[in-house]
Image (tube, rainbow, N blue to C red; front, side):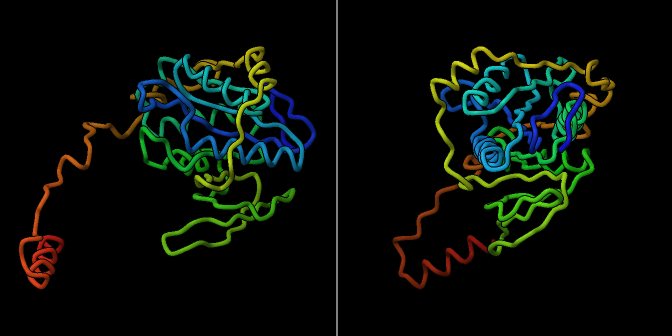
Length: 255
């Protein structure tokens, strides 16, 4: 299995999980909910086949706390890609930074991501990262059916049901929420997280040009964010006959 300059993976699989720190409803910062399932799946693979699990995140210095929570759950180490130059990056710029970080650490045999983050909801970073790494990928994985030295077979959710796909390794998958039942952190894990050093890598250490990072490296911009329900208008049709209600609803739906 592969190993990198910064880390020597233990015998077995070199697995990386990309995680993100997001704002919660209570105005706190926490591990993105979808990423919890990706981390759990990586830990289960390590338990069965051996190897190491590295949690990798791009974000502010405060994201080190989120990486420690990953270690508390069972990850072997945490790596934070942090630099002021990364601020404001869109999904493409984020994928470029993550790809460079993973390549520097030694490209993993398997990369797992959550399907999406609760703050962006784009679902684009995983596939974009796979493209930058030059590896096969698939999304919305519901179950890993087989994992061999040269390939992985997954069951993935589609709009019409599910399908079975086989990918050559190394590969990247985004896992669907509900693929497993995430574990709780143990006292031993929490103590281990407190003792663990989070590796921090800057743009310079990643050999990234500032033109490829953050806003400078982002071809898209978020101009505004609004709640979709703001555009909804309540319309009552209950005072009419059933036939008239159906006709009116049809007119509203069809415009």
